[in-house]
Image (tube, rainbow, N blue to C red):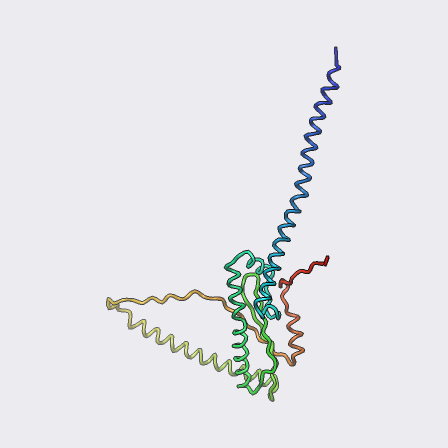
Length: 237
């Protein structure tokens, strides 16, 4: 029985199989190598976009260039790809100088009533990853009263205001009940329905009183948020 054809046939089949496997392996390797490269390229592009947007904010708004406003990296990335969020952010940045002026005037008036003078005022702003805003006022006040005496007087005034608000609320409730009794029998006229307005962004403000400007600056440095965005620097330069 002739078997001379087996060798050439096996060689041909093996050669074709090996060639197919080799092509598959090469394609698989190329896919593995290309995927991370493409992902890395996309991340680099996003980083460049965020960095560019952050630089533009610093150039256009003093509150960004002087470091009083800190923005979450995650939220800044959202603003880079969402024009509506970017518009909201920049509208807030425009208002910062006026908000700080109002805050200073309010604190000055409050401390003046307590016999003190504000000698240092610095307000910081933090835009969190969900877009909410927090603010902290660091101040130094000179007064003839001790810190404990000033705090007690301030507390007494707050309690008095709370008492007045409570009394006003009770009077308003009494008027509401009286009005409800009068309107139990409809007269067939028109009825007005009060529709509450959509709530806007509320900014939580915290006040920190320091003994000196040096202490105030030290406290500010300690309270920088962990996810705050800071521009990257090219280490190859």
